[in-house]
Length: 52
Image (cartoon, rainbow, N blue to C red; front, side, top):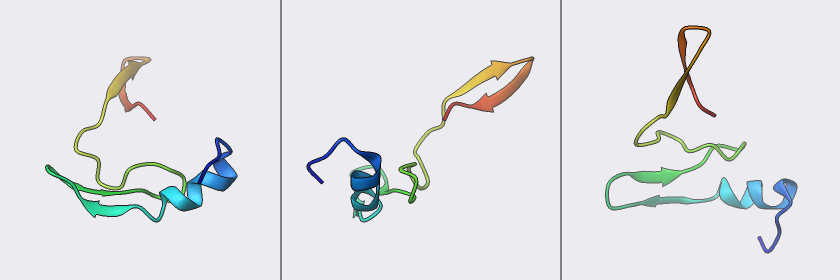
């Protein structure tokens, strides 16, 4: 995308779709991984929540 502007690179990132060594790699429109291999969590107010 040749840009650091999310409005420019997020549509290009959403086009990524390939089979990696351990998992398929694809992204949502907002740049989040589809089906990530792992999720990191934190505890906030005693409750587990995913780190975004």
